[in-house]
Length: 272
Image 1 (tube, rainbow, N blue to C red):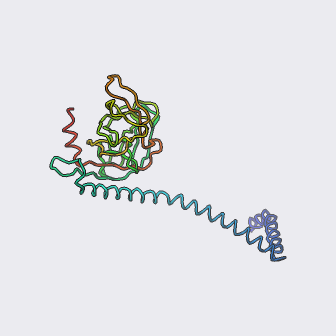
Image 2: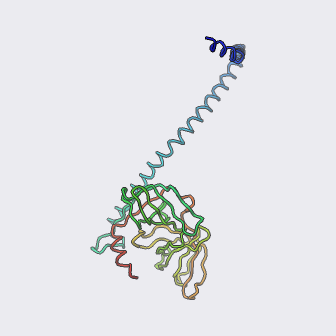
Image 3: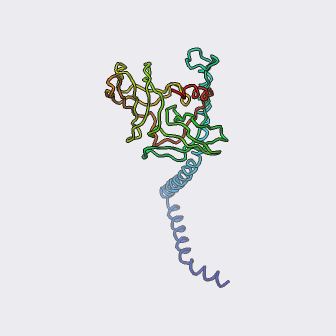
């Protein structure tokens, strides 16, 4: 009882002040229709602002589930597209049995990433239990080359980024049948090089460079865009500087590509 009386004494002044404010506002609101309208408008604005704040917080926490749903939708569409391509007689990538080589797409989330080292890697939230295997291609959700899987644990996988001195893949200028090798020489993570292209290929600034068929990458995935070129030391080929199609520093959601005949192709080309 003593503690209750003490508490009431401590909050008596604030309570009286709040009561006086409420009475004053009530009296002010009732003095005229204009004042009542002003108070109602101010109250609605305050309630709206508070509701908007809580709505924004709710939207933020819903982003994760919405993003996951979008990744699943892209994954499904990619697989449907692969099935449609597999039914087309215009495709030129065939397996040893004469059937079109299938590709299977699945999605993943980037957990860790680096672009400032000489050998950059990123980690994704899928592993062996999800069907991920070494040498699977890693693309952005738009189908742009980002890297490939190096090693896997049960739940996670480490992927080699394009911005890695050890990274290499086949590439060609879209619309032309000149094949070369894509690699990174260090420096800017968005600058890579296409080498072994004949001088007479005559590339143009802005030309698109795409992937070639390999045991890692499906064909015609966007690699980058031509920025400049110069004559190579052998004086018969040119070195083409590209800007990567994907900004590796902002890589968040990715597509994994499993080529069903990758092992056979790797074994066939391993000695060359």
